[in-house]
Image (cartoon, rainbow, N blue to C red; front, side):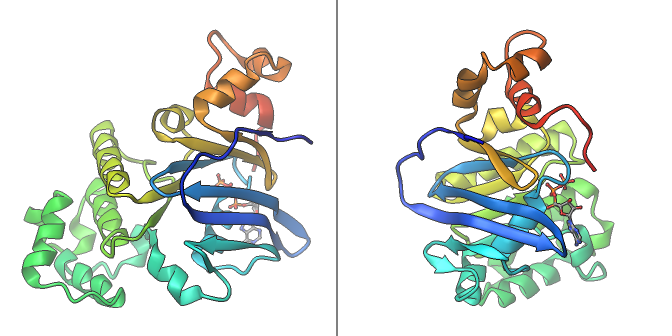
Length: 264
Ligand SMILES: Nc1ncnc2c1ncn2[C@@H]1O[C@H](COP(=O)(O)OP(=O)(O)OP(=O)(O)O)[C@@H](O)[C@H]1O
């Protein structure tokens, strides 16, 4: 199948995924996937349930070895230079990964130490204040609200100023205020030159915040480009017109290209 691909934007590449294959036993979850992200870019990996997004992120994070192809982060191969790759990545941990009895100041100190940083108490407090958590510094993680936990986890993911941040469905479960704040923080990270790779099921969000998106299905690339370019490119596609209810949106393109059947 021919993939609709809008030419890669200019700028140095921070992440390259080349012909990536990942299998679980006999099942191929990622099937020859290629895309790249440049410095300062917000890139969305979109796909229905089971499309292979989380598996792709796991390979990039070094949690899984690829069964084919390769991934490089800022020129470092995830298999051959795992430690150097880890230092370049910001990964938002799940709430369950934190030792929830510790206060968030203790946790911030612990994680900054793991990244080899020796932050003073004043600096840790500043980081917490930047995340809107100054009042919560002495609270155990488990006593934070869901939104505060999410903000803390993003703060920890970026405590070492990584050139690329990986976010798996970062806004799921957030109220509109927290979601807006999260985007302001992500935009701030981008203004400082950082790149972001995120997954989301919200096409509206992807259209609003991503510079480019890759639509994947069954582990394969279906389309790659800026949201508006993809809409322009596919607005006459009969599969897209069949599901559109007015002006063609990214969601129409997504459903048109990946089908309406529910996945598991
Ligand atoms: N640990 C595992 N063992 C076996 N199969 C797995 C495992 N993890 C994922 N899969 C399978 O691999 C495929 C891709 O799953 P993956 O979690 O990467 O998809 P996804 O795009 O992140 O989906 P979702 O949007 O539902 O989170 C699915 O068919 C899934 O059932």
